Length: 326
Image 1 (spheres, helix red, strand yellow):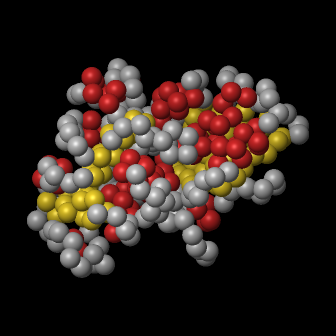
Image 2: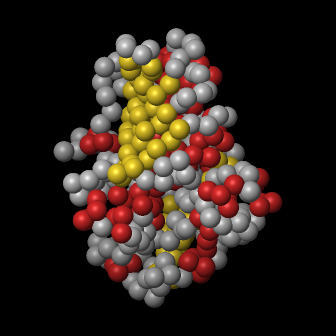
């Protein structure tokens, strides 16, 4: 068993990560960090957590617990300032370590990175395409995960100019903190783009793909789920074959049969992703669509998947992969 501590456990990503840790056969919770719930029992987060879990402690105390595995479910500025212990596997679910160029943090995240020299030690890891290369793991963003699953396997076979990624996510992608844009009166019966041309996942995509894309996120009136529709022009005709080769052995990412479109209701509440490819006969545009759960494959599920690989465990241990949901 690997001892496990979580910081920022009271947020959506933290709670979802804890849920998967509790279902994991090889991970054992030794510390639950939450500054807002410090001193409270685990049931203060959810009444179903009324077993033998430890009480909440401040995040700093959880991170100093000596656990074998640490999950950082914190804001990016707070995670960026964390100095990891020398022997633990650390998975950062925030954007605090996703960008290799420290100078980009001021423009895209609004703060100067406090430990720029340490960024080289962190491995940006999307398991199906870029498995973790170190014990310090930067978990990709939810939008970036969907777009990269759709585009990275075909990146060498498409024109790098003019790529458009139109993406939509449920309101939980904005986190649990209260804000006007997440109020029911704004979200319900509405669909709105946001951070147009300035979303922090844009440089993440360019860093991995090697070219920029036009990325526009939208807020859906849903609790969870994310769908990215990517418009590209092929320079090689084997795009479907490239996707099928990339994910043919994956238990997490499924390339759908021709003519079948991804749907949020099949991935919501799971750690799976669906990818499909279509051709627009009028414009010769190729359309690649990816659907996933922003809190699952887009956050907590991917964090567990990365930790499993870093620890040498079964990649799918603790993940939600099966079931026929209504």
